[in-house]
Length: 86
Image (cartoon, rainbow, N blue to C red; front, side, top):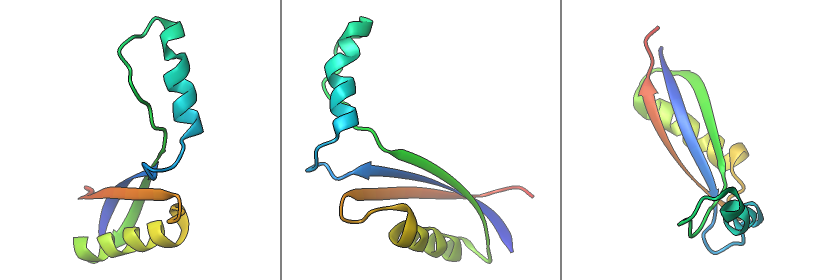
């Protein structure tokens, strides 16, 4: 078995309202930061897992995202996987 690290980014669908992002966008100029047009806020998750190969690791992470980590009705996800040194 090999050890992999998965980095997962979960974001709300672009069509849906992102209240946290809207609040940041609306108020960031109060911190004297200018030029920001839009902010979207999501989640970043890192998982360390064992799998026989990268394809199996991808399948495990994808299933984890679809079944538990992501609300597929309101969110999208993307991930990358890298083999770790043991």
